[in-house]
Length: 103
Image (cartoon, rainbow, N blue to C red):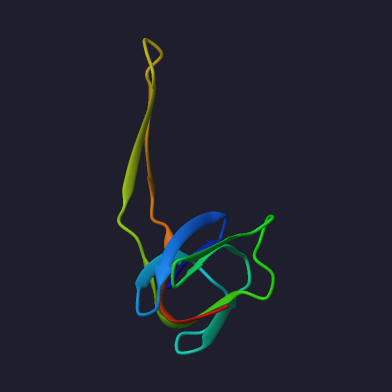
């Protein structure tokens, strides 16, 4: 059984037991979070596509930890003007472990 869920504006294909990194959620580490926006559900070969979401389907996950992603460097420059600037960014992430998929 697998599901495609929407979290933080992105879509993820998950099965029970998966660990994935999503954008920072406002949930403490060790808590449980439920994702109600399930876009697709495959249960024993029976495919259910939502319109836009599958009614009564949800994904339950545990929040493992909060961390920060790797640093991404952006370099801005305008030629012949003497302007150059280095900008760095680190995304705040939440690591979640999928506990179960409810159909």
